[in-house]
Image (cartoon, rainbow, N blue to C red):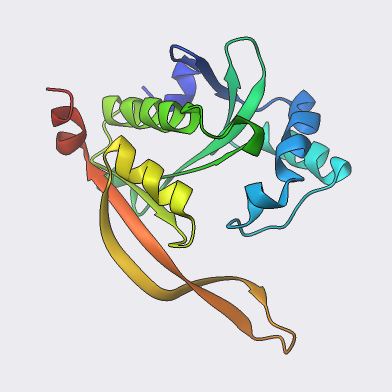
Amino acid sequence: MPLSSRLPLTTRRLVLRPFRATDGPALHSMLSRPEAVRFEPYGVLGPVEADRLAAERTQDDRFLAVTLTDGTFVGNLYVAPDGPPHWRTWQVGYVFHPGHWGHGYATEAVTALIDELVLDGAHRVVARCDPRNTRSWSLLDRVGLRREAHHRQAASFEDDEHGHPVWHDTFQYAVLAEEWRARTS
């Protein structure tokens, strides 16, 4: 059964659900913060851009809104196939509102998402992050993914003043379904 048919997912404190067009102001509150988007392939967004992005995400099942059970928007998750379908590999990502950092919401949301992917038959789940993003790779360590690689100058989200890419390294993390299931045995 595909993940989308099991939404919303509810944890002890959170709801993982499809985006709604009305999520624009909450998305703006998060994505207008430089510290929230520092390691993302886009800069801060204005209110009109955030409204447009929320509307686009209502049609894009790769993105999930993450709210507290009272409806307060705290972040979003990204989940997409990584490789051909028969690999059963998924990439996950996340951005959370800086005002909600330090409460374990991202850890809880990512854990719930991987639980569902493994339940749905995933063989492997991967995540990538910038090595300078200590909060991100610490989360991946905490939830039980393994750092598999440090790719040198593997990504560029901006150009310098001469139009040349500004390269940065990436860490690749992964967990196999059998490892994920064994962590709670």
